[in-house]
Image (cartoon, rainbow, N blue to C red):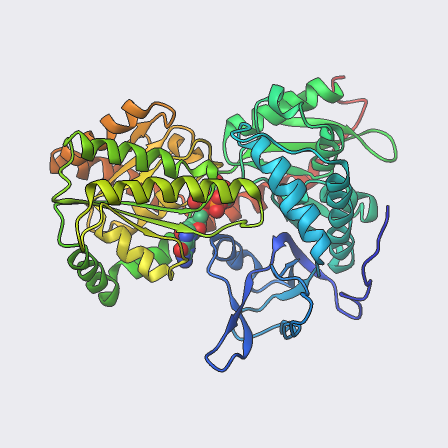
Length: 499
Ligand code: GDG
């Protein structure tokens, strides 16, 4: 396998008992007012999920910073191996411009992302991009192989790194390998379009435990392995031929991810956050009904679906333009990929038309923010919103709806949620919608806006109880415990197994 990167990234460093391998590191570069760049912990859910598992262990997180060297720019300062905020090590996998274009924007986000989201937009398959994917996956696998202590656990994250489990197993057969897919695993007929379906499935089967958000994703993967490889599989176990004879068990399971409920609860009870939520409603003109959307600006999220439904309801006067507002936060994402520029244009056209037709001076129909906000501001928005609109065409889980539920410590609010988000299985008390059915979405918005207070509270209470009991720390614990349990019986001997 080609390896054309400096090999010294991890040299001279002691090996660790738990290694997380993710495309992105849990730190981000921030620039102060004097232009000095430093690194701080990034606020993402994965960091909160994994930190309890990492703390107190010899642990390492391997990933990319999100930046590559650009001509004429000063290099970013090195990331401190440790700092006061964390007691695990960080190792950077440096990516260059070509890697980012071919591996990340290319194969990961222009082939796998759309294919795994039901081919909402047409996946682009290019051989040179898959070659880059393979090459970069090997860089991550080699870094993990060097960082892991004998017999330790390596947990690989997400669709960008599906080849890593098998690559790592061939380099380090002694380590226990887990893999978690954060996006949906599609129906077999769709997945089997992928020209490189075999290396991808074999890559994943290098893991001892392969986790999905939903039982549906797990079943799709198991069906694909049966159709493609014909290997025996039963009770969520695929029997994989082992390197030295016999068979090895690759287990498959559903582990629905969640949010850091404790942290969101703390923010939602913070006086300044509550004060800000009241201020926000004031700034919006104290409307009778405030609707909210919060998403990465991504074509899977159905931002256009909800904006169209809302606009039609205003036109039809089923919602009153005089006392209803919608706030849409759309965080910029993957801006180098054409389809992301297209969805931005679509969304902005709808916003512009709605505000031109239905707004008035100082009172737009849609308040649109294409910028990232601090998490405290998001929680203030969650507290302020009467109706949260989460309408993806397909979503592995969707954390925003769980954050909204966790933030509603007042027991108020209403959630309109797509059936095609993984979270719909766990939050059936939401107003569930088929995002392809425009009239159905409109009905659900009106129903949520006009439901009696006690019905809304009853629904919210049930959703809050579920989310409180299933936080992200539980998700990480259950995955790692299942991975550890499997280690005692991970070899399926040919004489004892059915074939
Ligand atoms: C993938 C899967 C799965 C958004 N804007 C801001 C901001 N956010 C935060 C939200 C939430 C997160 O980003 C988005 O999470 P989602 O789950 O909604 O969506 P993806 O980014 O597509 O995540 C998804 C997830 O992985 C985990 O497995 O649920 O299905 O697609 O936490 O709050 N955060 C801040 N400012 C923003 O402006 N601070």
